[in-house]
Length: 184
Image (tube, rainbow, N blue to C red):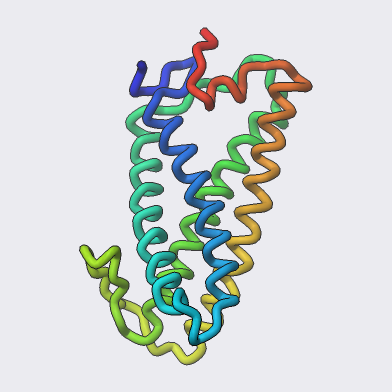
């Protein structure tokens, strides 16, 4: 098992971070859509948002770790079969995915701290409110949060479809590399 990336494939840490974030992203999306439908007297009315916030802060930390890991262990080089458009698109989509994810974290933080209260993370850590009281902060941040969440889900689905296209149509090793398979 290789922890770090090689010039031809992703290492275990990159693979695990990729799939952990992907699974958490879809779980958080589903949780977010579900929790906004809850009525005041539903038993999950208060616990669901607290869980969503705690997972969100944890996912933010994982994404910071993921960015740091990209510098410690750079991703494999693009396949020689990739066109210039494919290479540029891959970089652009990854940057966009990362950017949207961080914007989701920021907007979620602004929603959660608009009232000046800190975010309690699983009852273990308290993230203080630093920006508060800007009138419609929670409403505006909530709208942005929702649109960004839909955007990252749609973009990640397209990202997955592109990986499947590489695997089944182009028959290259793009998907195998992200699954940690030996392709060298």
